[in-house]
Length: 218
Image 1 (spheres, rainbow, N blue to C red):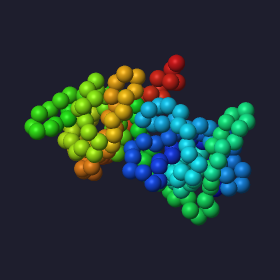
Image 2: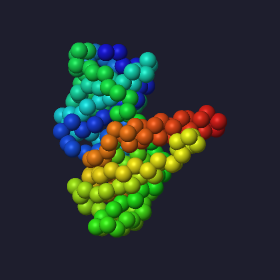
Image 3: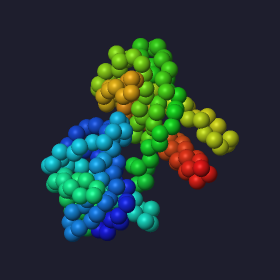
Image 4: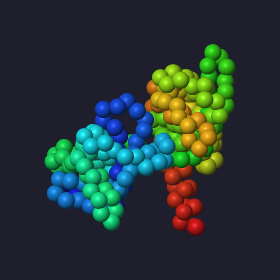
């Protein structure tokens, strides 16, 4: 499989049940080895140092806007002008096409109400996708890993025809960690019907388009 230099790769831990993923770019491609720059966590936004032998599910989009996924393993590092991490590439027949929705996570503030024992508390999510979101809070004791909570998510569409959409779903707390003085809580949706999921996907694409327009006008 020909993966172009500069392609964005998203790595998902293969042996862990976590919402954390790692973003990186292809620096070089030799035979069955892919060289990537040091990846950045989608949760902490910090550089991650991947351990040799760690397995991932890698996803990327080619020039034709088709998404592909493949299983890979960290097989080493290489020093140079740009320090790189080496990933093993499988045979072409082991690449699979994937739906674009797997890639859509946008960093945008979204109002979220969390319900516990019939009591609602308001928070703001810093990012959202069809699979989950991450909220910020000043209270380190607000959430516990693996806890299940009920959410009401407010999706303010820019299109007047769509207006404001309220999505009600359940979610599992993945973990709780501190970043820049605030607590970040990634949550994974556990019960989202197809209509609500499609609404989130449309909202994410809309926000992506708005961001691209702003970048173009800078």
